[in-house]
Length: 243
Image (cartoon, rainbow, N blue to C red; front, side, top):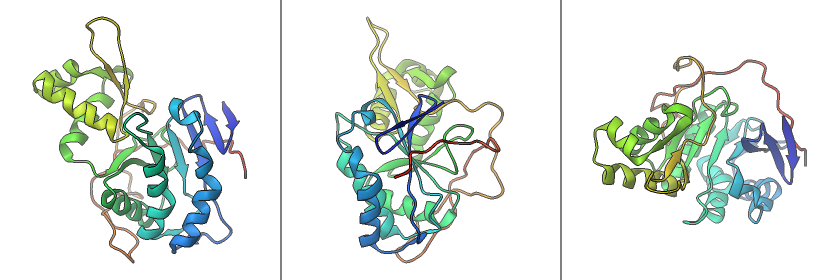
């Protein structure tokens, strides 16, 4: 079920999707990227929907997005809406390896993090990119593979053979970077850390048509690096509120 809301669509009561589109599908300059951000994303800054749902920014209508334009369109918006009290969780959807590389560069340079998917976080394993270490990625995976993607610091510590304090510190950092949700539990159970996307059924695999991006340098459009573990559900349809 998809429900229209201001600026986007709530999909299956799990996340908000915003589809960015333009007549000219090549976005190479910051001025045009800024106009698209204002048209599609800026209205979310004061929206309480960001306190309740992760957001998926769908860029699949674009064919080219340079690192500078990616910074202007996506990263500056994330910097404005995120705060220690509001670590907004975001995924960016693109089938383009070039755009994925540009986003990876822009996020890393701004010390921000987000998830990358090809189409949607339903049926794929979103890939965390940006300013995130392999140690944090391992910790993130330790939460993702738990039942319903939920775990306490103690459970993660046991899985990774860490002490509880180290596990708790890593999990808190992932929350602050907008990669995990945190839920308080009563009593002495300890906070629950929650992977923000639906669980994927079946084994993960590396698809032949999409590779994890290398950070792109200014003026280039992509590359390949960390392996993506993704599966897709063919023919999925989404209802999107048009602007």
